[in-house]
Every structure is written in structure tokens, then in C-alpha cells.
Image (tube, rainbow over all chains, first blue to last red; front, side):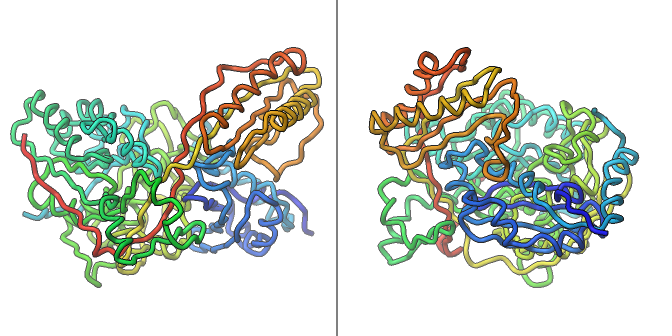
Length: 129
Length: 457
């Protein structure tokens, strides 16, 4: 059984800028989440998700050894950090924006991914909240 | 004389101009490191520093270098830890003079300071253009500089490890550079100590050093700063900066000083491996090209992660150049509206500002309206929900070619105080800021000649 959920359920993200390009690494929460992410996330979907915020192409690069899917968004920051009128000048929130996209995930993959934060707290301790 | 180390411990002392000093001092005092690197330069920084130098030829370096070196040099000199920094910015020679004064005052007689220059290609840009060389904009595809040529304020090449290695070979204790790439701050000491050169047998090893350099170069960026798992990160106020322990086979262990805050684990290292990367199969640096898809990460215990198996390619024939040019002004202001109907009030205010801009004929290249607390950073990816907000901010920004036009934003937002709705409140609006736009391009390596001179305290 598949469920429609936000990408945040199965992935972390970190994004930043290089000129007018935004780069965003999607970091899968489990190995199976990585496979799901590679199937579910497409350049077309990301492009549609951002609408006029991303004017150029969207490229995806799978990184299977570290289970990350790397996203490159071109002409995506309103001209680049020094010239853009955006509040998020360097695209730091763009990764989080990607995590709001909806994806179809098998229920057991989802359950396992949802346990990742607990595993992280168990392993490294919980410092806050 | 070349080093003979079988392993080398390198610390990352800063991620940007404005970073914290204490974790860097702690690294030198408690980290048992052989080298510490300091990156203070972002893409825009050289343009800022060139303008400072144009007004005062004795400035143009990162001013932080003075308090930083006052704090770093005593423990570094005592422990034999070498310092490599790009805080020379647009004036490495003068930065070195300042550091020499500090070292002299601290009684560090015999300290050798290598000054690396040659990254500044602005002086020869015209000459190269006259020779018919084109500098296309890598971001926009625009073919040549003609349109912006008379507005350029800085043009600096991202240089590699070469001159830093030369300085280390001649015994430098401190190396002060301009725009060497952040990455080279970490690749240079490794190549020097292990006696690597740029020939084929060392390509993968250099790729390893580039990979680890990339992971640590934003200091706290890999030790739990900016993390998705921030709730698991202890004591960020005393976050530890990273230490990379390099081995001759190309493997590295990333750790941090004992009794510091922050967290190093597979997640925090992955987070930085993917940070500000274009094609991860080809992470192009002046010293080589690393393939991040070949890299393996493994936790080796608490706050220790091993990075191994990086593959790469030889260094490129071209270097990246960042050209900065004057490109008008940005006016920006914000005002907050309280409950009840906070969002409606903010929308009404935006409408008022638009009408005012029409009435006074604002000549702007671009105008933007955001609702702070609603859609200011997630933009079009989120719906504007009609909720019972406690408060909502309206932010207006415009870019114009003149200061006067950009300043209209400040004036009109100020008017909202009195002509919009009840309870509106704003902080102190700031004056328009000048815009330096960036023009990333490439230059043949042969046209850039990094050099170094040695000075002694």
C-alpha cells in the first residue's frame, strides 16, 4: 500500500548558492527511502513545484554510496545573492521547500523512515525539545 | 625541506568573515593540529574589499585578521601549528605587514610569513580583452563583458595550492593569501607534507584531499551547524570546529576538539558533502576534480567519521574568475501588522504601496512584496493560508539604478505607518545598499601567475 506524503517524511535537505544557481542535496533517511526518492523525484516535478521561482533547468544527480539525491536549480535565486530581492538571498530555505513536495511511499518504507529521528536521538542523544 | 609526516591534522578555523573566534583558538590549543586554515572570503567579499582599498590603499584586507592573529599566533607559535588564511583579501601585502607588527609585539622573532598574491586579474583584464579573449557569464550565458566593462570593481581568480606549497617549502609559519580557493587552504598542507604533485599517480589522492577540504571548509557546517537534526546537536554556543586527520593513502578522519559542543556523525558530514555543489561527479577545484559519488563515509565512534575512496581527475586548464560590477541599489523595508486581521492588513498595505509607486513613477528593475511569517522564504511553494495570525510583516524590496529611486521604498513604507491600518509598527528602516552583481567566468590557468614573497619577523 502506498501513501501520499511530503518528501520530508523520508528525506533531509541542505541547500545553498553558487551565483544564481541553487544547489540542494536531498539526504535519504533510510536506504529504501533513497530508492523511493530516486523513483519519485523528477526534474519536472521540482520545476512545477517552484513555479516562477526557478527560471532555468533542474538537474538531478544520484549519489547512491551516500544515499543522497543532488538537485541543481539554475537561474533560481532571482539573479544571485548579491542582486536578488528575495529574503532568502542564498537559497538556504529552498531545500526545505523541496521537502514539501508530495511523493508516493510504500507504508513500510514510510514507517522505517519515520523511526530515523528516534534512532538518531537514541544514538547521539537529544539535546533540545 | 619537505615534511615527513605519515598523518597530518588540519583544523578549519572559520567559515566566513564574521565567524566565531573562540572555537578556532580552542582548535589550536586543544586540537593537536599541525595546520589551521581560515576562510574569510565569499563570492562578494573581494568586491567589497577592493572598494575599501580604492579609498584607502592601506586597507582592503579582512580587518578581522588583526584580532584573530593576536589570539591565534601565541598558541600556534608555541605548538608549532602553521596558519594558512585568505584574509589578505584585496591587499595581502598590507595584511602581512599588520601581522608582522603583531608577531613582533608578541616577541615571535624568526617567524616566517609567506604572502601569496596573483589572484587579482583585474589589472590585466583589459589587456586580455584587447587580445580578443572572451569572458562569457557562466550563469546567464551572456557572451562578453562589453555591457559591464566600465562598472567592474573586482576580478579575482580562484587560485590553487601551488604558491602556498612553495611558501611552506621555504619554511613559512603563516601564509597570507588573497582569493586562493577555500579548498586550497586544506589541500596545500596535505600535498606539501605528503610530497604529492599534480601528476597522474596523485590524482585520486588529491581528489580525497579536495573532498575532505570541501567537507571542513565551512567549519561548523559539518559539525552540527545548520543541521536537519539540530535537536540532537549539543551546546551549539560552544560548537567545535572540525579537524581532518589526513593519511598518506588518501583516507581522512573528521573529528573535533574534546569537550566542545556540536556533533559529527554520518548525517552532519553528508549534509556538508552536498552543500553548494553543482555536478557531484565533477567537483571542480583549481587543484583537481573530485567525484563525490565515489566517496564512502563511515562512523568510527563518537564524533568521528572516516572519508575514503574518493576518485578524481586532473586539475583543469582553466580557473574560475569572479568579476564584480556595480549594478544599482536595493531599497528594502518592512512593517508589521498585529492581530486582528493581520494578514488582511498586510495585503491592504501592499496594495497601498503599489498605488503609491504608480503615483510617484518608481523606476525600478524589479519590485517584490513578501509577507513575513507567511511566505517570505518559501515563496510560491506554499499557499497563503487565511489563518488567525498573531502578526504579519510586509516586506517590500526594489532594485533600481539610482540611490534616489531605491530610497523611495524606505519613504513609502514609512508612509504606511500613518496611512494604513491601526497598530502598524516598523523598526528603523535602513538606507538603500549598493548592488555588486557577479559575473562568474573562466580564465586560462596560464594567464594567472600566483606568486609569493617571504617576510620574516
